[in-house]
Amino acid sequence: MSARRSLVWLGLTPEPEQELPAAVAALRSTAAGRSPSALVTAERHRVERLVLRGTQRGWLRYLREVTDLVVQAAGAGTTDPRAALLAGEVVLDHHRMLIGLPGAGYDRTALQRRDLERALARLRARPEPALVGPSEPWSTI
Image 1 (spheres, one colour):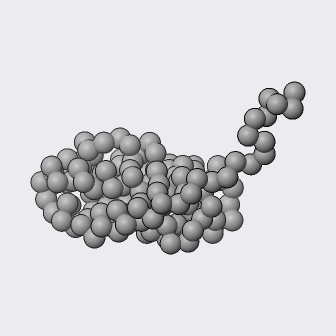
Image 2 (cartoon, helix red, strand yellow; image 1 turned 90 degrees about the horizontal axis):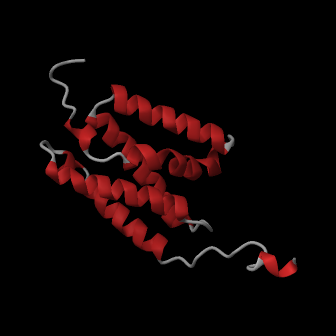
């Protein structure tokens, strides 16, 4: 590892590493044609590689992809917005914390923050998904 490589971005928060793989896999699953568990595993490996061997610039490129998925989900009117809400909130929180780090990361993510705020507002405005099946399953026992 080069002595010039900045690692300060790794100390922000563990939430993206923990929360994003499953949420991103759910967002990608509509077009991927792969099993959800395979997509989660692939996302976990990708995030792990970025964190262990990547750079802040590469990490921010990944989060740009996640932002695009969230914005697409907000515009598509999917029936269950939970994965998009989770991913959007995690990335938005991450991008807001960049203000405390040296470098231009905060400025570079300004448009993403704006896009995420708009997408999250649309997603939050959606009605809750309808329950499938009886709302009181014990009533038939």
